Each structure stands twice: as structure tokens, then as C-alpha cells.
Length: 141
Picture 1 (cartoon, helix red, strand yellow):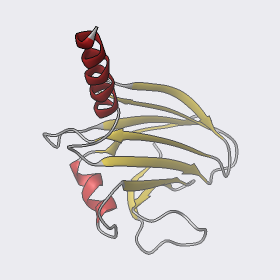
Picture 2 (tube, one colour):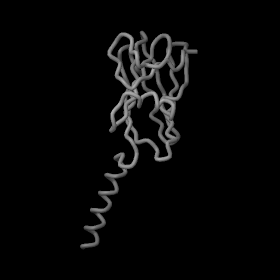
Picture 3 (cartoon, rainbow, N blue to C red):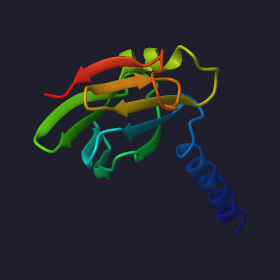
Picture 4 (cartoon, one colour):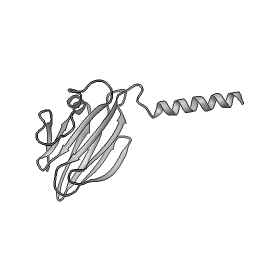
């Protein structure tokens, strides 16, 4: 009985560690739309497919993940807005560098802004108007 109790305690501890970012950084990514009408975003990484998400004007979609220990984390997005389409890396080493510039230690944040012109990213949340820290990444095709 004592061994069963120890097994349950150890299993619970490993489960908690598996769902927290103890070794690598936790990241929160958010996509906000400022285009009229809905955009559809399909977001995925090499081992996680977050599926399709409809983001209305003024709406957002947010998710969190633990960065890989080897620094090779990649999240990709496919976006549709009416007849327009675009695909781009939503998180990789380049985007991490952009988002990390203005942040303290702890959870990292990347804020994507989808506009009629294209896609911007920043480490600061979008408050309306022009964000001087936002970097233009890609236009709609």
C-alpha cells in the first residue's frame, strides 16, 4: 500500500511538471483583427494543431505554450480574409526576439495585429492607434 501511495504522489508531481513551463519560458500569443468582416486563422506547430478560428472585427484569439528547450519552437498561421490569403510564422526565433525587446522576465507575450495592410507584431498589447514598437511582418497576398 505504501508503494501505491508513493506512485500516486510521484505521478501527480510529474503531471504537474508536464503542464507547466519549469525549464523553458511560457509564451502567450494573441491575434487581434482590425479588418472589417471575419478572418479565419488556422494555427499549428509541428506537434500541435490548434485548428481553424474565426476572428471577427475587434476580436482576438489567444493561446499559450512552453518554448522548446532547443529554441526551435515554431507556430505557423494560415489566414483567410474574403478572397485574400496569407501564411506566416507566428512564433519562431525572429519573432521571439521582436516580442522580447520590451519585456521583463517571466511569461513572454507576442501580440499580433491583423489590419487591411497586413500583419504586425509587438511585445506590447494593441491599445488602438499606431504602436511605435509594432513591426510590420507581411502584407496580404
